[in-house]
Length: 79
Image 1 (cartoon, one colour):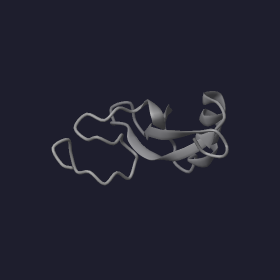
Image 2 (tube, one colour):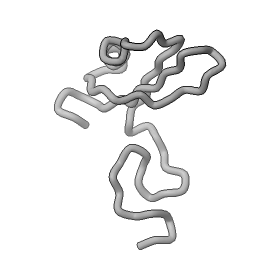
Image 3 (cartoon, one colour):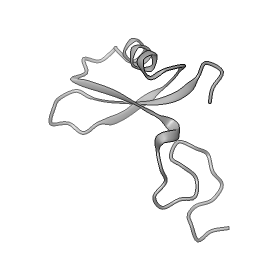
Image 4 (cartoon, one colour):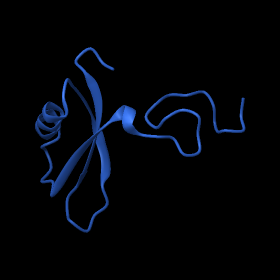
């Protein structure tokens, strides 16, 4: 957790048919404020849709460390 609350990863797409892309992160004490901070921070593009997800909600599939972390291991089989 950051000094200002939880870290939220921000994803957006410009058209309905586009895939979401990771565009950054914001720190906020609540999901509601994270949405506001994300919109204000990343409003330079005309987004069709933007969403936030708590960083600690992501689960690693093929690595020990979760996504968005700087782990030293390269995979489950490595020490």
